[in-house]
Length: 455
Ligand code: XIL
Image (cartoon, rainbow, N blue to C red; front, top):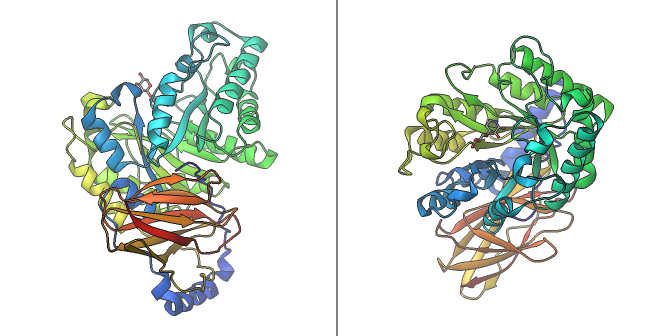
């Protein structure tokens, strides 16, 4: 997809209103269930499709050097609908010499992803690590300006192509201090993080801006609390932050803990989206993977999960065999657990608002028929499901009403007209039911099927 908005501005509900709303919701659901039930016909086939049916994405880190490996790209293209360049957007890759920007490898990944309907997370604009030598040796106001220039240049270059940026990565110390990490960037002044966020917002106003870190999973840890306090402070002062990324590299030294869900929901309650950004689990316990997915699905503002590589052999910690596919590209038990958790997962429990009242549209087109039905609806977005009959090699054109934007699709390959409002979806071998998520942006008009043709 070309545009993806990961925002979730669902209104919060106070406890006093809850009982009445639950009763009203139950009545409304009973009255409208035929048009309103979440679609299930196409659930369960791939990570990306199953996550999309829950209004989420499922992504992976991608290395440009592996895009020529057919086994790798087969899995990538089949399973994932979001991509994070593993190293190609880092400072040393994009500005190897000061003022000389280099985007080739990053663009290779961006083009691969976007041409296949996957969204891109940008990683990362400001970080103490993987700095080019010229930046490592800088300090003070010169470094501050160089950092801000880097943020501006790179975010501007990828404007409109990256749905979310890790603006600042790993700025806090491990251990019990709760302090900022002592880095050359930190020594330019404590306000360097908010300065980076402001520069990123100015450069790409539509991208979601995230703070990203590791060892922030355990709600009781000082580092988690320190990041939480920073985000709360930023929200209270209007620093432009939209999301917090939890890397979630789980291993024996830093294991998954059951209060992870509390961590995700506590951050979300500050008014930011939360995302699992670099998931890997030493030994790939199926139960732990399942817990992580269930925790994300339990938090309405947890809008996506990214694993940090595809096959174990692609992992930065290959010896821990921490991923969902083995080194030959076969699905592991953890894969089955993740897929099942995505398919069984509950959808957010907000009361549904009035669904569209027009009946399903069934326009004829060529020698196939496409029928659009409403599926799950959230406070800011809704899913639609299109069932095609009469052809397996179909092309269906669907239009949404501006300012709506399609933010996610599954079980088809989409292309877009220049307005971004008309989507041409082609069959990709995933069957005859495809779906998509529309960000309402205040307009709840049902998308319209314009044509169905055999391609
Ligand atoms: C890692 C990459 O996976 C490696 O290929 C590279 O050598 C080092 O960086 N936190 C992050 C990621 O934010 O960028 C890191 O990625 C893993 C830890």
